[in-house]
Length: 305
Ligand code: HEM
Image (cartoon, helix red, strand yellow):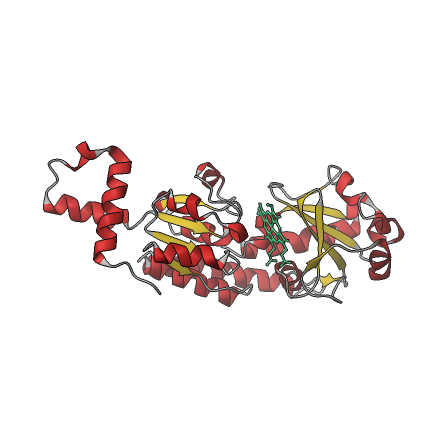
């Protein structure tokens, strides 16, 4: 982990004070005020990664955020924060303009050169652990609790997640028929990618006791009509950036129409198309137990319809 040198803290701090309110704010500051302002400046955080943003907010530190990336969509209030671009294509200038004291990033944040340049500019860049299991989520909460120096709040959140996970396990213990799912990452209409193995989507399907109909390749890919017919999915799960409410979707029609092979599969019926908000299913943040349960229930219901 990188730490700020004192001189760097002071120079960043001074710049931020000037930006915050002009030189007039500095006059009349006593030592205690100056110390207090320095410590509050430490809380200027830019967060890159929707799930991490959710954790920071769940720990009660939303007010420390001065910027987020475009995958940070929840809670809704973070959408009003300045954006530093897409997690995988961060803008160096965009981040620096926010004069952060700390940039907390997830595993897919990049380009790496941007992160290095931030460190060279004496910004504390902390990378949070990856992982799509409950254990990984809990260790992320713990790590963020340490970064924000709120270990107690982190422990309380971990306890809450444990309780929710226990309840989830009881539901998952009830056997369901095998449901073969085609999971489509629908970020932009021109880019419909189907999830193979080693993806967040595949991990979610496993958590929910569902089968990925496309386990023959790794990552997200466009697929042909022939591949869809061969996979014979029972159900399509489509994620879109701002579909906040899970719903069976007529408005997914235009998207589904792109997959011509579907008409020759059990997933041809509109009742077999489920639309979810991307970051609800794929952020692996504090909403994880809820998202798994909702995905599971919606899938079983869709099969009955
Ligand atoms: C500029 C627009 C965007 C482009 C070009 C884009 C591109 C991509 C690509 C190519 C992948 C697949 C990566 C791989 O193969 O591993 C991906 C994954 C993903 N994207 Fe984006 N994306 C965009 C915007 C967004 C937004 C706005 C969100 C959030 C609301 C988002 C959330 C995700 C998630 C959750 C994944 C899956 C990661 C995983 O499973 O580990 N993307 N994106």
